[in-house]
Amino acid sequence: MNISQVLIDRAAERPEEPAIVEAAGGGARALTFGQMADRSARAAALLHSARLHEGDRILVFQPMSMELYVILLAVFRLGLVATVLDPSAGRRHIEQCCGIARPRAFVGPARAHILRFACGGLRRIERHFVTAGWAPGATRWSRLDNFEPLNPVAACESSHDALLTFTSGSTGVPKAVVRSHGFLLAQHEVLAESIELEPGEVDLATLPVFVLANLASGVTTVIPRCDLRRPGFVEPAPILEQLKRHRVTRTAGSPALYARLLHGAESGETGLGTLEKLYTGGAPVFPRLLRELRSAMPRGRVIVVYGSTEAEPIAHLDWDEAEPADLDAMYAGKGLLVGRPVHRIELRILDNRWGETLPAMDAREFAERALPAERGGEIVVSGPHVLAGYLDGIGDEETKFRVEGEVWHRTGDAGCLDGGGRLWLLGRAGAVIRDERGTIYPFAAECAASQLAWIERSALARHSGERLLAVQLGAGAPADAERRVKEILCWAQLDRVVRLARIPVDRRHNAKVDYPALKKALERHGN
Image 1: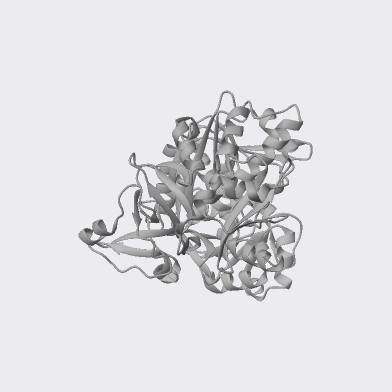
Image 2: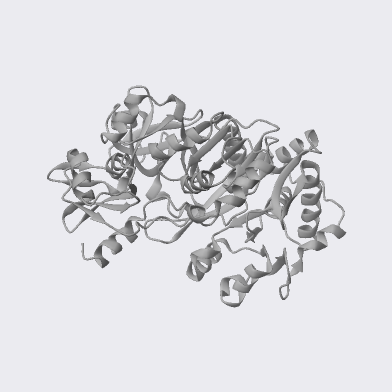
């Protein structure tokens, strides 16, 4: 079934309800579900007039906005394949991705078209559409208003490609992640269940895939008034005003974003009190932030969501269900609790062989390899919303293996299951430290260090043969901070605690430690 048909059916049920709301000047503008369906049908007619055919790939450089979802719905309607990559990743990345995907059309605002002058891969694309402003040789997107709606929806098989994105493998070469119409439908179903999407809710959405789930569930999406490429640096006041103005009841996003909103709520009159559900993930979410969020939401719930690009979601935890003993265990080095695996996913812990290819197995061998409760190892998952492979199989050997013909995905994360079947994260499988003192995982130390209010961020690393914990200190840090940290984390047998002005983090969520960059920072500081 074509994913757009689900969205169209929802539009027919709630034609007058707002589907997406975004900031405009000093106010806001909205498209109803009915208007979204009509506009995307006209956009489909515009694309069809450009002689684009089922299966063609379209490179989409549109920021998160109403128009992004008009474009995606139009693409899905025609059986085209939306190709999305991060233009801020640099020219080399864009060239590599264009070489892999070979898109036939390019759509985006005028500032995105400027990249065509610097990037040969973009210049080789045959057809161009400009959504705002003007670009040479590009068809104005506003022309869609002149077309009659193209209402028929391409009859796609569940295996038909719908969305193509990119992730980098361990070598830094982009891997093309293909999501079929069947996959997007399965992901919508598991998201709707696991994050409890209910028609009529109002969601401040910061993750693009969650907006598709909202549209298919009758949930109104409010797009935050900020640069979502840097969630850890947003100005909180405009977003807090949106929460109040639009009576937002739920939100999902990076922990770095919510740390900024908490900071803004403390210094202003508008807080998080209207929220009933807050879902956060994409990076480690430590207990201190969860407690602060829960205190700021007297009527709400705070839920941790664990997932990855290839499997979203994997597990979730309602913070109200965490026991005092769980908190004690996290601060004692057990890792980071993220709750039970979601319905429809199979999860196992295998001995950590990250970096080695896993062979195909039969059920008996797989069962023998699976580790018992409380044993740490590599997290592997399988299910209908777990990507079975990459484009042309490039990268499959790194993260995929088969059991009785069924594809399993290696998340690259380490963790363990407790006796109750709950998942505890231990950090990246490739970042584990093994030495003569035994084995220690990053999150064991980093989560334990987070109990100290004056530590803003920490990162465990092995450097020059030593176990180091790098710390980024905040207000109130004592003069003997290093000694205090070593004392509290005595079980970690740290050689040194090193102060850094800033611990490097990932570009997408601004919350995950960038370990390669950390290594360079330690080298620069002579540590």
